[in-house]
Picture 1 (cartoon, rainbow, N blue to C red):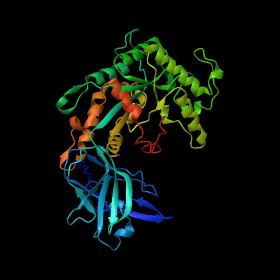
Picture 2 (cartoon, helix red, strand yellow):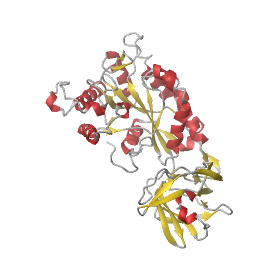
Picture 3 (cartoon, rainbow, N blue to C red):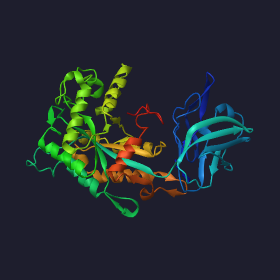
Length: 435
C-alpha cells in the first residue's frame, strides 16, 4: 500500500470555529511534508466531502501529515503529545505511528489489499476529537473511460459512400490500435460517443451529422466497432447555443410522427428525435446523455435543472459529465487556439487522479480532425501524467494501475456506476443526482 507522495511546502492548517461547526482553511507556508492532497472546503458539521488521501493497494510505507486535518486551537501552544491518529477502514481501526522528529506526521506500514473509503480519526488524550468522513481512499485500479462529443464527424471532401477520411473513423482507428497495459500487452480500447442527429452551425459554418447518409454510415461504423452511443442533442437543435437549459423552456413541436402534445417542451422533442435516429440506424437504444456545453441547469431559475433532468428520466437517460476535458472544442478552428494549452489538460488529469475517484471519465471531440490525428499522443499523455504522480517508495505503472475500458460492456458499466464528477463539484460523492 502506498500514499501519493505529493511534495509541497505547507503550513499548519488554520481552522475556525463558526456556530459550533468545524471549518477548514488551507494556507501556504513552510516545511516539507509527504502525502498531502488539498482537501478543499470541508463540511462544517462533520468535516465531510474533503478530497481523500489516495492510497494504492499492495504497497508499503504509508506516510502523510494530519496537520491540515487538525484544529489550530489544538496545535496552538501545544505539541502532538497525547494525539493519536487512526483510520476507520473496512470495520477495522488502524492505528498510525508518529514519525520521529516530524510533528503531526504519521505513517502506516502494513499492507491493505481491500479497496474502499475510510474515515480519519484524531484522538487527544484517548478521546475522539475529530472525524473526517471518507477522507482516506484505498484504490486498486483507476478505470478510464474515454468519451467523444459532437460526432459523427464527416469529411465534406470525401467521395459519396467513403467514410475512411471521417475524423470519427480516424478516431475509431486510433482507439483500435492503441497499445496499453504493462509492457504493451493490450491493444485496442472502446469509448462512448455522444452524437448529434441534426446539423450543427458554428461560426456560420454548417456541419452535417447523422442527418445525412454519410453521417449515418459513420454512426453505424461506431456501433459496429463495439462502442457505446449516447445522446448529445438533435431535432431543432441547430447550434450548441440552443443548449438543454434553454430548449427546456421552448415550446414543443411535432417530430418523427409524434405530435407536439406528446412532449412537454422542445427539449423532449429534441431528445426523442436523436434517440429514434440512433435506434433506427444502429439498433441500439441509448442510455446516456451529455448536455452540450455542459449546460443543464440555470443559476437564475432552479426549476430549469429539474425540468431538464425530468426530460432525461422520461427517456431513461443518465447524464454523463466529465472528470477531465481535452481542450479541443468541437472543430478544428478551436484547436488552433485551445489545444496547445496542454498544461490545463494535464492539470485536469492530475486533479482527477488525486481526487479519490477511481472511475474517471475523459472527454474529447471526434468531430475535430486535429484530435483524431493526434489521438495516440493524447492517450499517451494520460498514461505519462499518471506515471508522473509519485507513490511512496515506488512509481505507479500504467499497466498495473490504469485500466482503459476496452469492451462495450466495460464502457457501459463504468458509465452506469458513475456518481461523482471531479470537474463538477455540485455532484457530491455518493449523490444520486446523476441522471
